[in-house]
Length: 97
Image (cartoon, rainbow, N blue to C red):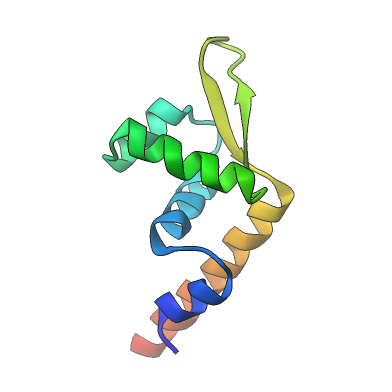
């Protein structure tokens, strides 16, 4: 089974999967920092973040250092999703080693 098929079964698109995994690997970044680090247009990232919030996988919190900025973090459900995605990635890589 391909990685795209596996993540589709988890009800997540490939770009959303990449975003969830990035947030898991880089906790505590602001939306602007995520856009910059992933080289994604901020307005496109905002749409994906909104969708991930609606699915209950991420949340926005006020940044304590700059109250105007929002820190993006995974929810418990988002962490579970990230673990499943990581497992799928590990299984796929294991096939090629």
